[in-house]
Length: 436
Ligand code: DLL
Image (cartoon, rainbow, N blue to C red):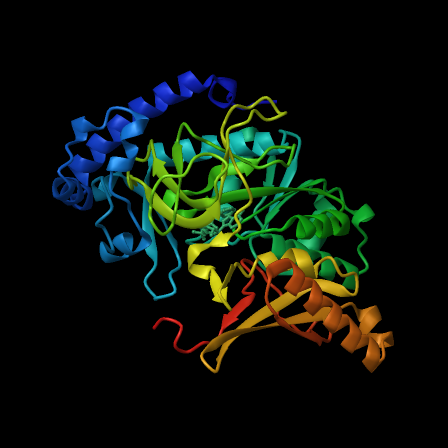
């Protein structure tokens, strides 16, 4: 079932024509309304009329998070204050949030895209959707809430945290769909076990999980523990939040809503465009944003594009899993790796719970990585010292074979790491000079 079949299943020629026409409008609009773009175009000697086809895209300057930060608070707002009906913001590490504004038309588009995405993921009007994202400046809850209501499903806006209450609501009101981060899905599953609420006592059938990475192994854990199908969902505040892309029920890559978000993959070092299939940084141009139009926004997220048709019948281009963010990439002993790569290796061990923390520190001017892994309660209770040592060695070896360098493994007691209510904080960087 499709929400908007012409948009989702049209030909490549039709999509290109639509994107080109929207790109031209966007470039002209951004030039007229936002000083950052006007100055940037002038500096590069580009006039809006020079941009005629998608092939001209690489001529346009990029936009980065620091550009948004430097224009705080209203520099990227293209409309008068009276036209703004909502703001959201992404939390920055440096204190000030990065605001993103929405007009009524922006919100109407967002709602429609969320309904499109949720339909793609399998949500129907008779579903009961429990929102476990937080209702704050964060976009996750508001976007999913609006989309589910637009479909005609029932929404339970429970918000983040209060895990016992979530389980009570799910049980007593027969929730069929859960919106939350993958790490919170695990927190819920753990609490269910503690409360003796088996998955067969719930009506849950579908989880929409986004805002952080979820390895295939993590997906299997979540699907088994909650008895659901788990769908990956991607987006970022700067581009409106969720609604950028989502997996269909084939679970084979995220379909990008290309009529609203024009994707490119670039080499994060040279910034040269890369062809489909090549892994690099995802860059997005918002094709319909009224309040905060963004051109060639560098997401920092690493993935690749796939042009092949999908078994679901949609022709929207897909991107692969988000491997990590360029800012998270570590170089240890000359090897590049994303902390999220560890997840797949770790979850392959049945003695280990899907709860881990990665610590980075500097030793003799070299980066060292230690991972703390919770064992299962059963293993912790029964295993002797030898088994602990043997298991830690086994995991270290598997990591070395997989990633190419040594990571120290420390096995820890179950339930000792803090549990996530939103985005899990799994990496703790204690390298004081890391910004040097
Ligand atoms: O996380 C928006 C969102 C909410 C998406 C709910 C999906 C569901 P921000 O807080 O601005 O917005 O964080 C955006 O989170 O650049 C990625 O690095 C990461 N991220 C989001 N979705 C995924 C995903 C929301 N499916 C940043 N896989 C993005 C991996 C993800 N990383």
